[in-house]
Image (tube, rainbow, N blue to C red; front, top):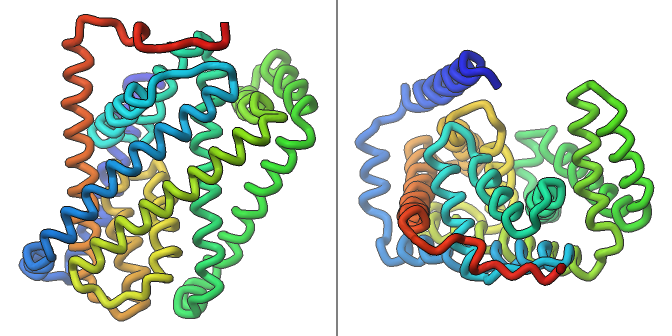
Length: 330
């Protein structure tokens, strides 16, 4: 992307975030938002914050599982630190994918092949999103409010889940075909979209036949997303919000996916809008919803700052990263 195009993109994202925040805050008393934050139970908030550290371990274990499936390995603490650095870049760059770039780079240093590094992080992300769709689709069966007020929600979740299940099925049964198609698309087409599609197919084909590793990675994805949902439930409890726990199994996955959309600055504005919309279905006021979103985002920023400290230590360290890496693939 050229510099003018990049600046235009960032400007548009800032405008989207600013417009959404203005629209959401225009009829809300700012003092009420601050009061909700101030009155939240600090011990429960501390517990919610600590849930992140369990998530680090689960994420690193899933990443390591996918690396090992390709014949490579790395110390778990190295992967945890890399993930934390990724959080720093995700939160202090205009896009939430900055963390994936960091992890892809570190995977490349382990594997020495860009295509394999891309495959690891792409499949890692794919399994995480699939787990989100699983929770949301199942939970939505027990919630009438969201299904009635947002008619498209259930069909979208079901279609997303079916597409993910279909992709996994194809991966298990047609890995060789995927690989051949991927190579053909990447080598013979000048169209960038076709070449990108070929790259995505190549990422899937890299895990063809790796059933045990993929199953373990998917179970870890379910555990990770459960940890995320429980984290948000604890924040709601800390604030005394009257919202069914089962509803959080729909709201949090949907909010997570929406915040990934590259249309705002790090999900700012989108985050608040999603919670105002869905919490409103259960009778919560806008100031409560925004306070909830800001507490959650405050935790995310704090995690990003911790990642920044890890990154600073990484820059100051004299020992190269690759001394800690163990390439067991030869």
